[in-house]
Length: 481
Image (tube, rainbow, N blue to C red; front, side, top):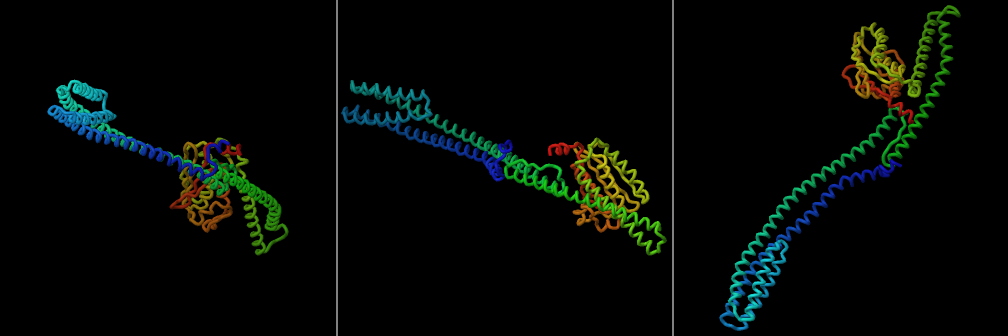
């Protein structure tokens, strides 16, 4: 149930979610850019509109005051009601323009109070004119309003230009924020992309490792894939395939064991009969008969070696179930095997060049000894007289690596793909005694330790590498399985 909550139901949904996760920061950044540009555009339009209205009203106010002054002078000369009516009409327009000007948002309260004071002074002087007919107070007020209005309009114009400068500062700040937002969005999107790629690579890597284990014949470790539903479904089918292959392998091993056991009895009788003939127990043999008896003895021994090799291969294939793991000195075990190999190699003047790091490993004693013995004996067989075999043992925090390289004919690219198959013998190996099971048995024991036996590229001779874990994580795997 936890897996169902962590992952979508299908791999396609996971990929789609990754695309959405990658695009989400970019969409958020784009939305922020559009909103910010909209707000900035509104501020820009408002600032332009205020400046435009201020410029228009400033001209109209100055013109209204000039008309008011002219109408008042004409009334002072003519003393008629018509000139006073013209003043009243222009006065109404002036007051309306003052009211519009006072409604511009950026103007401070002190400036609005000044505008109200000017209209109040004009109201008082105009009332005096209507009551007494004396126009002198109104003339003085108009002259004063002209001076004060010019100053007031200049201050308002400065305030509106300050608003424009503030808008420019806001635009610069917003531009910086947009760049930062775009950079952060791209960074988050790339992090999401990296995380999704890492997750997909991990899921696909597990699937690939499971297939590689099956391809290498490692059937002991249970296959259980984590991830979306369809990937878990594939994991269940791979686990079914592993169990099926394991069942077939066990059946094959059982048939091989039974056949080998049944062959040993008649083979022993044939070998014993050939030995009695060779000892001339039934009577003297002719040279031709002695030659035939030699052929019987030679092939019976070869057949016995094949049967014993098959039994060892079958045992190696099930070594993981029976190996008793213990802490061993890997380098000392190699030295012990080298004592035997030096006796055989000394007859052909083959030298060993060893560089063995002190290494402790958790492994099976007999299995590890067989791995080392098979590799060294194989190197001795194919080394030329007076040749050299390089043996190197290194390790890191998790695994040990053993390299064995000889100066023999090496392995061709065509043979490299089949060199670990049972009974496979290349053209070069047919000139050397053997049945072609040494590397196959060594590989089975290496797989039983959850390690790897591989053929490395080499310019001279054959170079085999054994990689084994120092600890025993496979023991936990076996217990869980």
